[in-house]
Structure formats: C-alpha cells, structure tokens
Image (cartoon, rainbow, N blue to C red):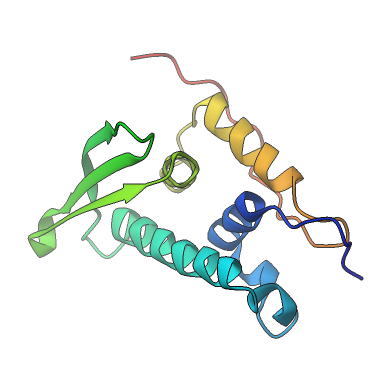
Length: 146
C-alpha cells in the first residue's frame, strides 16, 4: 500500500536513475500518470544515457571535459567520447549533476564526495512510506580535495 504522503520528486529521480527496475511501470502505474512524474521519468532516462556514454565498457568510454555552474544553479556538463568523435553538452540540475558524479565514482570504483552521497541519501529518504527505496553502495571514503 502506498502512503498518502506527497511523493518526493527528487527521491523518485534518484531511484529511477540509480535503480530503475525498482519502480517498474507495471507495478507502480499510478506514479507515472501525473505530468510532473512523466517529466521525472524522461529526465531519469536522459541521465541513464549520459552515464552509459561516460562508462561504456566497449572501448568508447566518455570523459568529462568541463563542468560549469550557471547563474541559475544548474550545472553545464560537457563530455567527449573520443572513440566515437562525439561531444555532448547538457545542462543538469544540481541534484542531477550529483547523481552523475555518484554513479561515475561507483562505476569507476572510486570514492565520491560525502556531500554528493548525503544529498542522494536525503532525496531517497523523502520517498513516500510503503514505496521501495533503493539502497546505495556502502558509504565511500571521503575524497581528498584537489
């Protein structure tokens, strides 16, 4: 049974990117009827695509070449996939950039920043009671500042 507490859009975004199979449309159809939640699904799919392009194991792994914080708080992420002669620039919300950094660190078996890990944990904690909550990898060791 799903709680009547409002659903955290940020928590759902994190869940749909980190563990998309947790919220299968056929099991949680009512979550995907609202326009705002359809937008969350589209953003999650876009982020999974960015992660795939940055972590592809077929010899075409992407590389982040620029990250700029815009005046409105969004993060402009630029990356290249050298083997495919491909460059992409995308504007991400702060949370979306956090999710990308976390998943890149996890895929490359490196530690992510504690701030990123905690932000995702807070977002996931906002999911309505009764909904499954994906678990994060064990808390990483803090990274030394560069």
